[in-house]
Length: 109
Image 1 (cartoon, rainbow, N blue to C red):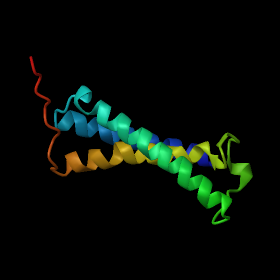
Image 2 (image 1 turned 60 degrees about the vertical axis):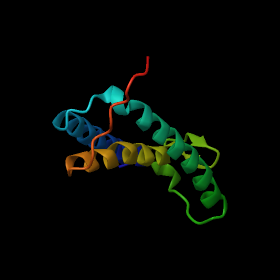
Image 3 (image 1 turned 180 degrees about the horizontal axis):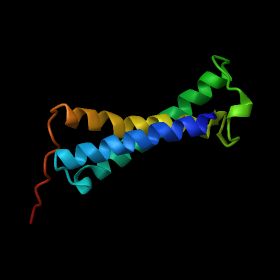
Image 4 (image 1 turned 30 degrees about the vertical axis):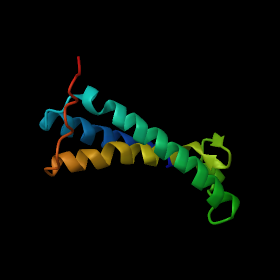
């Protein structure tokens, strides 16, 4: 199994858990979508920076036969699936285990 296949299983599971949490807690996606996007972009930037630093310093290497071959610098594209999972998985767990729902934004006239 390649890294991309394994990552896609995690993405699918995280997405299903997020959908379940949003449905059960009756949270409209439009209320949390901007926060999820900001968190995703932030984690992607941090992943790009730190993966490149760690790979360049020789802390780890990948078996090239398990990668699709697309890289951002030295970081394989597969590494960006895990932050994406975290952005969906962590809030879903928070809401499913009774964490506070996001507040509605009051519109000002």
